[in-house]
Image 1 (cartoon, rainbow, N blue to C red):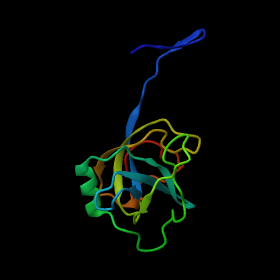
Image 2: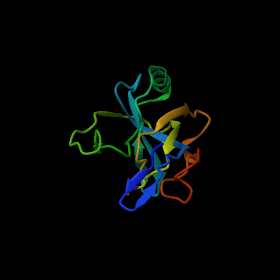
Image 3: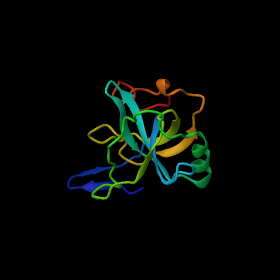
Image 4: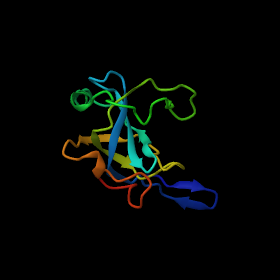
Length: 148
């Protein structure tokens, strides 16, 4: 690993990753085999967007497709638009899902100004054994790291 140099200072950059639980709120691609998932956590105002996953493998996409369902009532993200990436005006074509599935993801501990995952989350495992109420709430102390 080469150190960063900036003027009179030199430092090393370390990527620190941890696992975190998040709620699947929407997907890109077909519901039966999504390409990526949009993740959230609840706070007092409702389900807040926390970030997007990396591209799902075909196996993970199909496994998620088996447990995801369309919303049964009004979705917290109804009418929202999601950017396709940094610096682009293009929006994602998403399918909203019932926010009832917890996905454990591996994330970089870096957060943006809104405290969302700064980098795409890497799916780790589907947590059918965890209820969405058990996922740490968005913005509470300790909610930025750790699993459900």
